[in-house]
Image (cartoon, rainbow, N blue to C red; front, top):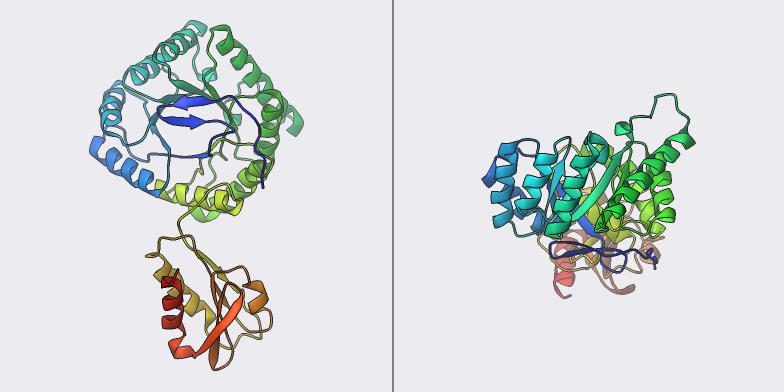
Length: 351
């Protein structure tokens, strides 16, 4: 069991963020914020998929007005993504944001940063201090690896001191890079130095099939070390996919209790004497309508199959002309291959 690091507790609306609370899955809308109905539809889909917080871009005054309308109808707390404009930050806070994401390096005036901090303090909302490697002003392309991490840590420490000097500590931290190793190292560094909750993400990870592996390595490595209190998987595509990937990463580390079934499939080898892949695809499609935390295994042969599927709730292992059915690791019967799928469905339904 993973022991998560102790942190302060931050409130974003009714969502608690911090080491003693479950890790919060986030996503970000892919629509213009001025599309109020479209945004609400996407927020509802994300909430249904398992997102606890959703972030929206607020680049213009019209977006700020729309953000306030969306907040009033949203089922879950919303985060305003702020860059460059202190006025947009204040509009979003006054419009009902539960939290804002702010990169202070993009705000030119210290007085403007103070205005934002004081407004957030008055409205009792959270601020995520978000630093992206690409936005660090002193970062030159040829700066060595270790110095990049040190610069990110130095910049974060300066911002934290500034916020604390204003009496504000309802803070979440994030340091992001598109580089897996620098993401890991920089987050370990801030986790060792500060006790604020940390938001994890690998920025600009790519389209879904390209994003899954680097995001899983970066976030999985940190989560396994107890680091991370909220997470977002950044992919170019539908945001519900971000939530689904996040859930799978967390569930694989036993950090998320899912009501979705899990399918285990043998990779196959020369011993396999049946069309396991087509059968497994059929089982996967059937499981989309099953809403219970059941483990189902489809194995290629009876050599290693029963042992490898021993911790499955229901498993099938097939030979040349028949299949064997296992329940909780014990063989309970066999069936012809033509009947195997229906027998498997019946056993799944019995749970």
